[in-house]
Image 1 (tube, helix red, strand yellow):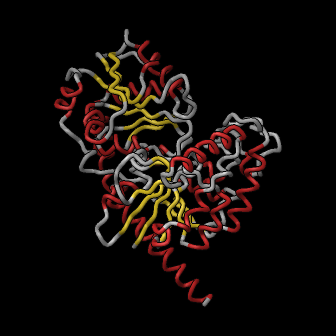
Image 2 (spheres, one colour):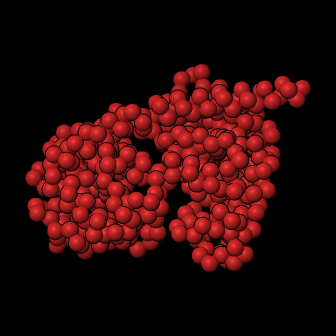
Image 3 (spheres, one colour):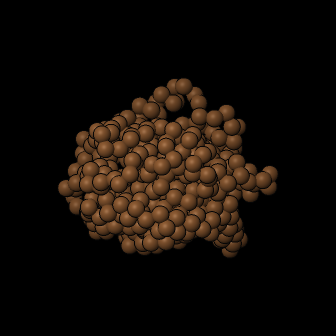
Length: 418
């Protein structure tokens, strides 16, 4: 089977954009990628468009123009070029991922691609069903076509208030002419697809993202803390900070308020992944540890060192780091109203509290840090959930089964047409 994944990056996001699927399958599968940003020397990963310097410069210029006008990659021409390339011609199935960023793929090209090859599209966030919002928050105009003047434009552009109205209608026309099979990672996303006037006519399959359970697994907590420079008797609260000042989706301001409310009974560390600068004002109350962006074995060590992992997103389509924490035996605390309570199977793998309620969030942190038996029970259940639902091998098997299904369906259609 020849599989072609199309996204904006290869390694960045590799756990859910096809890159690691390529690494895990045997020689009976030929898995390629076409991306805008190639960071490896892997010969199965192709630049889209190809590496001609002038063409790449022209493409980058067009993408800046596109951003300025809020065209959401309507000007992207890489999709139209795909049939020229041998790796596309060899493919038995095309799998789209993030095309709204730098993939330079216009939705206008989807009907053409779907006529040539079976087309699968993983909907990573609600952008595909809105007039341009990655997350729509409280606004439900995506259910009725977006108003001619959007009151809450989510991206800045010259025509930011008016483009969502146009994009919604363009997507509706395009999707009606495109033969696609959709994939979502969570029930929260599947519910939205089923409600969407744009997408609900298309077949949609729920395939949760998977992780390597041999990397992300419970490790000796004392040894992990020693590696992280954390005293064995401290309590440890772990979370990811995407930037307190710029955050829109991850609930960092409510977490900051919760950490101010919570009064530790023992010395407590904040183990903060990625940014963490904004939380250093809490250093008089907590020990603030900021290892930066880490992944793989280093991340598994850090998550195993933690007592709880907090992911207070107010908009979240899946939440892979929550699953990684669960696999390490660390219970998770989340807000209600996103995909996360279902992903962690609250209250089995962790606790869910009302969204944007810092008092309730502080209470959940206190409840788990003060109750060793409850924390250990939820941590054990979290690992069991990860093993039964989020193994990477299961993620790959589910995709292969779906590929076989759409390829067979296309062959039957072609046979009837002949």
